[in-house]
Length: 247
Ligand code: ADP
Image (cartoon, rainbow, N blue to C red; front, side, top):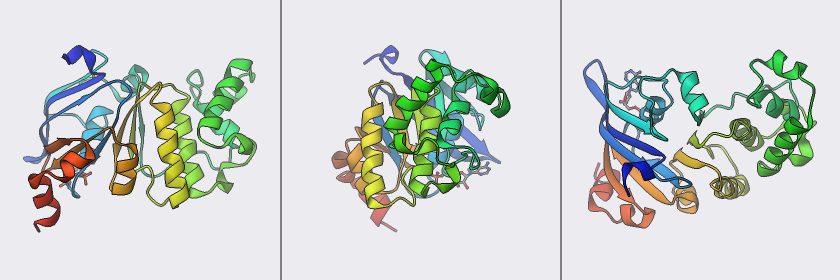
């Protein structure tokens, strides 16, 4: 494939913190609709790569091309508008609002919580909320205050709040941390369904879950790509075995 076939093409990405290269000449190419999982030991630079893509951290060197646009100099909110959604580990939902309202205020035309609630609930918003609610398994809980949801349901709600903004790329940081086995299975199902319209980039430690969702795996170590390919392939890579078992 050429660079134009990739929805995201990261090249030579480097960031130094006081001379320490947390990400060091990293490349990453994502095809539309794939689920890519980044794995690697603690401190490998996984979170920093997501921070760089969403503009939370500025690169020292390198380029981040997303749908042909260079993201590395764009502000965080412009990157969101360009179609990149990022979910952090701790859900940032509105506990006092219902499931419906949490999704409604995330609908892109709302600029603030109060502003969005002041809009009439027209059919477009209602349809979008109901469609997303089905995807995240909360269609029967639309009137429930978010505070009463389980930990797993809160994680899904936050994914839903991103989905309703229709990002082309969805980045998730350990999406199944703290979830039950049943919730992990449903999350894998959810991610499979949304690849129809979204590319997904996930950081994950749970290898069972990685095996369930990953089209391809990128193994990071010391800020660099150590290995890349199917989970089977990277698991058999002697370099990966050494990093995971060699100390
Ligand atoms: P991972 O997500 O793979 O566990 P991180 O991306 O969180 O790794 O961190 C990679 C390295 O960069 C770690 O050594 C971490 O301490 C360092 N690091 C991350 N962010 C900063 C920062 N803002 N300032 C200084 N060092 C940082």
